[in-house]
Image 1: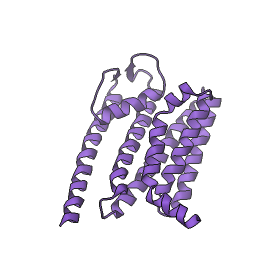
Image 2: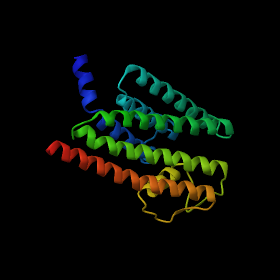
Image 3: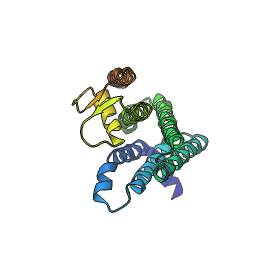
Image 4: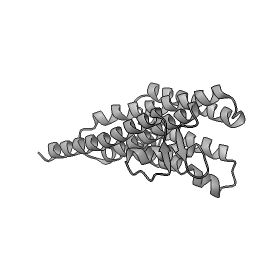
Length: 217
């Protein structure tokens, strides 16, 4: 039974991780429709991302490392909710989150390099990587705003979630205009995210087509 469960988790690990990050992006909706305290919703969804994304790891050692990084990030999230005015806690929360999702990207790239055939994992893996990229961009934008609160012009009510929204708007080059980078630092990171987003899509499509041609031939 345990062996079959492990085999199933390995087969659908990218799908599980993808569902978890989509669920994480919907955190504001969960917080608004549930009676739970928003901090609890954030921690629950963040924990699900850590557990699901750790399935990507190819060994117990790398999986335990991702659990450790995730625990540190969760710890600083809890501390930030309990002591929101402490600058060092906010900084360490951003830093630990950046390291965690960068590590998830590293694990994902390692796994995708080993896939030789076009299958469910090869299709869902790049989608998962794109979402990781958007979350990392959100962390960077939030950090810039934390360093300089005048870095962005924000319309409407402010919340930290707006920077993750803006990150995905940037990498998809949609640009609704409701968030505008004002300082050179914010504009530079926005420019980099725009470029990375476009090159990411181009590279993924090229690799997909290349593997498809190899399989057919």
